[in-house]
Every structure is written in C-alpha cells, then in structure tokens.
Image (cartoon, rainbow, N blue to C red):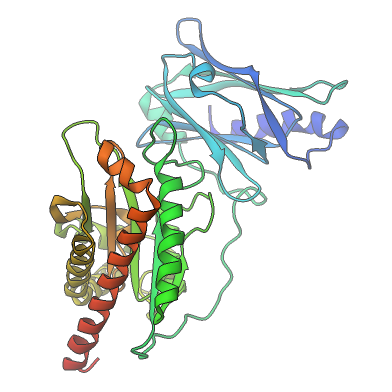
Length: 406
C-alpha cells in the first residue's frame, strides 16, 4: 500500500468521526480492548481501544523494518506489552510520548508488512473509539519503495527558527557543556524489570548539571530535560546552536552476551569518521555541521573535505577529553571497564568541530553496575569524577591552544 493511499484512507476515516466528536482532549488507551493478534495465514490484526477518537497516521520505516503509528495524543498508562502483543509476526512493540502533543506506537516487524485496511470507529453514545488495522505480508522491494516518514504540516515539528550562532568564547573561566541523556520518549534504551536507561540517564544528567553549576566555571545545556524523544542528528544540531564547547552523551547499555561491566568513555572510531563526513555532507541542513561556516552553497565533495579538516583539528582534543574523563571516573573508584577508553560508530559523536564523547556509566545487564547506577551516592561520586575530568581537560586545552595561537 502506498503512502498516498495511507493518507487518503486516514483522512477519510477521521473526517466522519471529527464531525461529531472533539479530538482536543487527551485520549486514554483502553488495555482490555487493545491487542495485536495473528489473523489467517499471513495477516496481523492490530486493535487499539481509546477513550475517544484522535487524529492518527501510519507509515513504515526500514533498517530495521518498523511500522509507526503517530497520534495526537494518547496516554498509554496501563497497557501491558505482554498482554498487548500476541502475534509472533511482530517481534516487539514500543509506545509512549514522542514530542509534546504527539504519541507514538512502533511495531518491530519480523518481516515486511503493509496496511491492507485501516479503520477508526467512534461510538456515538460514549465517544470511545476503536482503531483497527489489518496488516498483510508484502515483498521487500515494495516495502522499501514505500518506507519513510512523511513530511506533513501539523504533524511534524516546525522548522527551527533562524537564530544567530552564539559566538565562541575566549573566556578561560567558562566552559559550555552540552549534556546528552541517552534515549527518551518512545525510545527507552536498555530496560530492566523496574527501570530503563532513558530514566536513569536523565536523572544522572540533572545531577551532573547541578554539580557543574555549583562548582562554577561551567555553563550547562541539555539535549532534553524531560522524557522526550530527540533524534540523534538533532542532538548534534542542538550542540552547535548552543555554541557548546564539549558534548558529553550519557548511557548505560545492556549486553546479553559476555560479562561487560564498568564505566568506559567512547570517541568516534577512525573508520566511522570518513563515513560520518560523507553522510553529513549529503544532508541539506548544513548550517548545523560546522559552527561559523556556511556550507549551504558547497557541493558534497567540498563539504566533505571541510568536515574532514575540522575533524582532524578536533580529534586530538577529543582524545584528550576522553582520557581526562576516564581518569576522573577512575579517581572516584569507578569501577572502570577493562578497556576504559574505546571507539565506536555512534551517531551522536559525529560533530566535526566539537570534542564529543560518549560516557558509558556501566551496563544494566551487570547486577553490580545496575545497583551502582541506582545509588544516589555512587552517582554523585561519578558526577564529581566527570566534573574533575572536564576541569582538567579545560586547563590543558587552554594551554595547548595558546601554543598554536588559537
């Protein structure tokens, strides 16, 4: 089914219901009327009970295969994943806040599926609604051809307003730090029985921000301050627009294999740097790539070269930042991973001109790490270690940059 068919089907489904019902209030999911079940040899039925009708849209994404339903807006309280997902053809389901005013339901597809029918019916007596989707198998080529998030006014966030780039500061007494609590909103990150990575990292980011501000000499900006989804590329763009001096992404992953534990600090891998420059150069929002340089009129090859040049200047500073933060964490007792400084192809580390690191506080799959991360006193000591590492790096970086006349 094409994206155009989706649009017409959904607009028609909503039009009749909208005539009789006000969609302005927050809808609640009705768990006892919601399920995902197999139907027939190749079909899957998605039933979602709601306290009232709400506008919605459906689209698919690839790599990995997913079907996405956006709503304006749904409270998911009480919906249990195990009871909701009863189909073996859907490998996983996520739901929650997407951005303010929007909610999202994501179906992780074991194989390509397409929407055969979509129907929203509103009970005129009670105002309650039932959304019913029938999904059928499709071929890979058709799925890929129709995949992709549509750009629709009223559904998507508005384009960011043009604002002047904050000037770089020569003030040795202030370091502007962009803290990036990993995941958020519809993306919970690693999960345990009673908590998840997005919540733990937001808590730690707030505590680290307070410690930096109390220490003095730091300005702190955060990519998110509550449980909101923020795309990986937007996190980089926010760092540029804030005029950040350093970017620190905070995570605590889960590894089902091996015995990974302890804190580690990641920088962007060498092999990922060239790919990063190439992919970033292909995008249109080039004002977010290098602060103070307009790449809007540059072709991909020129932009790629400029990004590489910026990254070559930034890479030694990033490596020094990683070492300083790892030393700061180790001085507070860690515990540290057996390889505390690592490299990886993380999207949030691809800013060419801002020293960027990813701090893995530990692994939620390690009982010891999980207990530590849930302990406020341990988190305070780790925040202290990161603050000391940032201060040590700042002093050394000022000396090094003065030697080369910057």
